Image 1: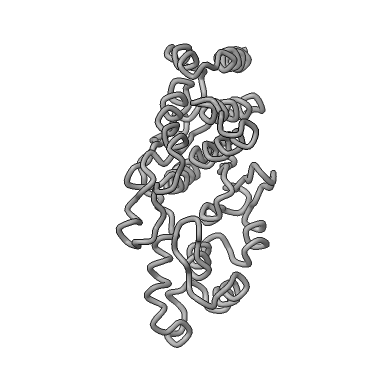
Image 2: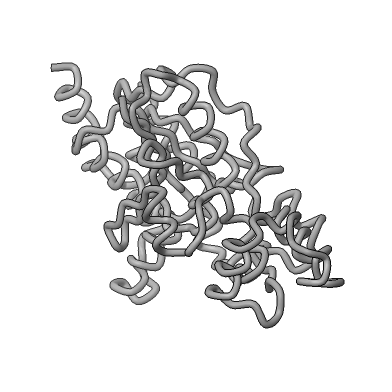
Length: 277
């Protein structure tokens, strides 16, 4: 079987701002939610059988306690923030497992789900649907891959090495050195992507760097590595069979009515019939 793990936060942002470009600020109240549901149904229509979606139910996480500049919900459009919980509820009603994260982040949930699924010999491949470079650390050869929906790139371990110059296991070290503006930490001044790749190729993980290489900045680099390292210990599910889509729940029609999206119900019903048949 193939397990598909979807970054719901990214998808919600993508649909929200995609719609805004066309509607000029007059988008439907739950337009982004409907967009994400349609994306998931498209995946099911294309053959996905086992799926899970991770969201940032609360934008802040334990990392904010470690670094004051770490990303928060400040500045996020209130109309976008207001669609997170409706998305989670709608996905559950559609029969999709949802991991709404509070102390951890959606990325941690994706990493944890990938680890759990990888321990099952029945799982042939795990696809993590997000362009977020953090998730490159989860890639393992061609069994756990990252898919960027925008560029339609499927990135295996060789793809990670080609893009970043380091193996997936060293992505946290790489990000610690170059920084991640989206997550709010700057990296180490004077070290760019090529320099970081060269250092990591030469020495390995930051902990193995000679003391004179970073000097007093090594402690900061190690802190940023903690921020960049995804947690894989979230207890999300016990068996991959829990991720199998069996059709929408009895509550889905009411959700579609609330979202003013009758087409969603028809589409999900057709997909369920096709799966059953």
